[in-house]
Structure formats: structure tokens, C-alpha cells
Length: 175
Image (cartoon, rainbow, N blue to C red; front, side, top):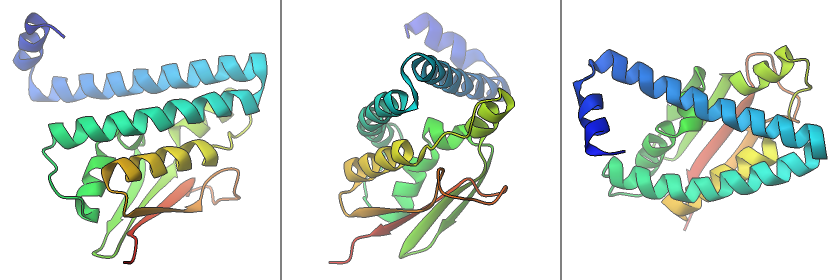
């Protein structure tokens, strides 16, 4: 982004800037879904999942580095870990979600998954995203603070309720 673009963005009303950010996050996820569907169609779900897992693993490390700097996150505690996670494109993209943050553990759950619902609407089967998301979250946690432990409570292909697509627990490893 050059100075002219930066100044133009600074001149937008706050609500328009937030809407533009939301649009760009949606576009990132559209591209993610489109390339995944293309790979899946040409090479199968296993190949698409492997490529997707590798992409998200690499992204996790980059995201943590950039978010820590942008948000000036100095500490490695669970509360700040969740603040960083909340700022990711994945978390921001999910409109229906819940957060629980306590001193010893934190939970993030997606109660209505936009990605899965888009697949179902297209007539494509539910994507078993557990490997992709778990790898991403473990790498994100490791890059943020190697002491953060990630546990999957539920994520496809696990059976889940209609109002709970995935649920992740985060804890600081006991010493």
C-alpha cells in the first residue's frame, strides 16, 4: 500500500473502513474456498486438505508475528493470546461465534460456520476441516507462546450439533 492509498483509507468514515475490512476478509475466504474447491475437484479432498493444511500452518506464524506487532502484545498470557486469535481473519470471518476466557483456560466456538454452510449450499459435502484448523491453531499457539496448549473439543469430521461446528480449548501447559 502506498501513501496515497493509506491517506485515502484514513479519510474514510470509520463505519466504511470497518465495512471495507470486512469485505476484504470475506474476499480472502472466498479465494480460500475457490482454490480449495478447484484442487478438490481436480485432485481430490485429501490433496486439497494437505495443501490447505500447509498454507494455514505457514500463515499462522506470519499472523502471530504481525498481530503481536500491530496490537503491541507484549505478554504471552492466555488473555492476550485470545486477543490475537480474535483478530485473525478466520475468527473475524465467523459471524456466529462464542468466546470464554478464564484465568486457566479459554474457549473459542463457532456456532454457525460460514465456510461449511457455503459448501452445503453448493451441494458439496461437509469438509472435514479438523486437520487444517488444528494444525493452524497449534502453529498459531506455538508462535504466540509455546506454553499454550490447543485441544479440539469438536470439529468436522466429528459429529456435531447444528449450532456447534467447532470448539477449541486453550490452556497454558502446567509446569
